[in-house]
Amino acid sequence: MRSLPFTKNDLEAMAAKWPTPFHIYDAAAISRNAEALKAAFKWNKGFREYFAVKATPNPHILKLLSKHGFGCDCSSLAELVLSEKSGITGQNIMFTSNDTPGEEFLKAYELGAVINLDDITHWPFLLETIKEVPELMCCRYNPGPTRDGNDIIGRPEEAKYGLTYEQIFQCYEMMRDAGVKRFGIHTMIASNELDRRYIVETADMLFKLAVELNEKLGIKIEFVNIGGGIGIPYKPEQEAINLDILGQEIHDAYKKIIEPSPLSEVALYMECGRSITGPYGYLVSRVLHFKDTYRHYAGLDACMSNLMRPALYGAYHEIVVPGKENSPDQLVYDVTGSLCENNDKFAIGRKLPRLERGDFVVICDTGAHGHAMGFQYNGKLRSAELLLEEDGNVRQIRRAETLDDYFATLSFDEL
Ligand SMILES: *Cc1c(COP(=O)(O)O)cnc(C)c1O
Image 1 (cartoon, helix red, strand yellow):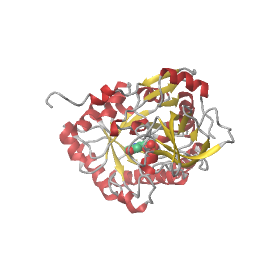
Image 2 (spheres, protein in one colour; image 1 turned 90 degrees about the vertical axis):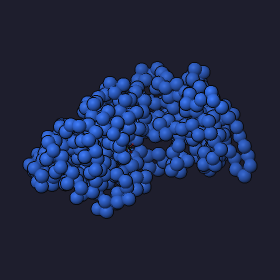
Image 3 (cartoon, helix red, strand yellow; image 1 turned 45 degrees about the vertical axis):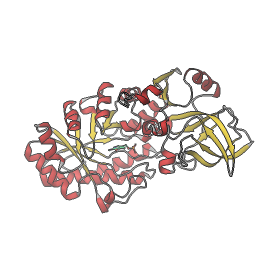
Image 4 (cartoon, helix red, strand yellow; image 1 turned 90 degrees about the horizontal axis):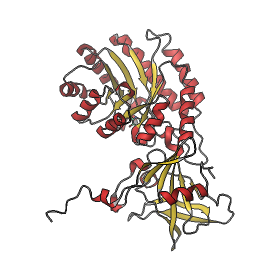
């Protein structure tokens, strides 16, 4: 079983103040991981990670990461405003959106964010919207059939994102001719990828494209953004990507492609979300009911509103029962929530220590796309988020929703 950064007694103390369910994030572990990523890429002078805000859109997390030099990768108005309110602005924001409303381009431009276009038609749309030519521009490349797919994001050829190879050259030419002075190039074609080679191939592909853009259009690409997509080992038998080796292998590609080219140096950017916070968040709940029908069910006080991934992707999440980690008395359970959807199950056929009502059940790896994917279907409310700070204190960084929040958008006046 996974070891947790808190004990059952710690949880009792937290739950006395903030009732379950809640998500809790381990700040010390997030910080260590952020520094490990930076160390793996310190060979690249301009290396920068732009944290994908959608993974954990909480200002306290964004602030913590910004202390390690991370920027924000945003793709909506709300995420832009969240970054702004967290004190992260200008080129510390990468705006990687798609099917983008004009107001979002406007806000990104006002904040001085790096604007990353998802389509060639967005270039004239952007100009009409902001009525100026940005100094710095970036486009998202979709390599189409030249690259294989990845389970979550799908095959590049079938993905809605990015410009084709031909469009990339057309778009950068248009941007150059319109007066754009500085350029970057981006792609994002993997999600939850645990095969290091795929990430290295992506860097290799973009390095080559940067050199080709320089050869054909005479423009200088100053950064290459290989997107996010580094996976995490949700399952016990899976292994995390070794960041040091990843860094070395991307450095090898860089030495081969960029250094001998007229570009001679480019900054390497990433916009990982999952691998930055995913393993360091936990959904803490308690057992509410048992039910023995055709199977043994353990019903929690959490449901898929708190964590969508199992229902959405059939995703596996480790479950720990604090205080019973080494119990030999085990039983096979379906661990469920209370939503009127039969896929509201955190685990199916999972062998766990024999549970009792009130036991804490900790669902691991919920630090990314956990609380963030929450929704209010069936009138289930989103939980609180807590931060286990580096000094051991626990602080609430988002309160739980209340019925008033649920009703805030409704009017009963003219019924
Ligand atoms: C979701 C997303 C990311 C982050 O992906 P992870 O798999 O969480 O690393 C980065 N960039 C874009 C454009 C995204 O949509």
